[in-house]
Image (cartoon, rainbow, N blue to C red; front, top):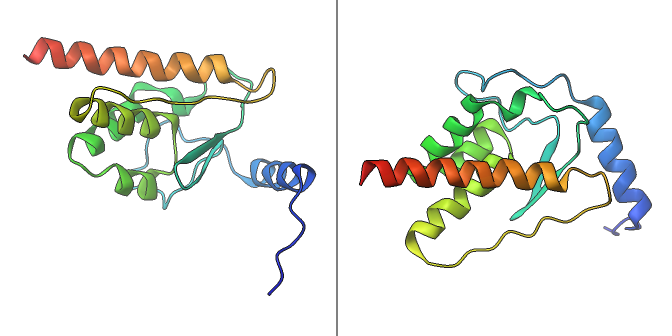
Length: 140
């Protein structure tokens, strides 16, 4: 009935607990989905929370993950992809990409502590947009 105390420390403790109890990241999206599991991404409404895995060749950054979210976005099913494969920076940027095709302006705010992975996540998302934009240009 009563809300528990909500402080930065409690939020960080919950994120640490979440991160420590998840298994190793899959190398590719599981066939048929995985009921929304992700080792470093979680989502609260439209807000994507990412933990820095402190590795460059993280399996969830592979091309096959981009393809899963792009295919879902192209079919108008990005919400289904999030439920099936879990929150992911590629899902977030795919939603932005789909909205860019309908409207001329979109924004993404990436923030966090020093060393949190902001630059790396930004690079992944920009590479994704550039790749999808070039593919769209080639098809026209």
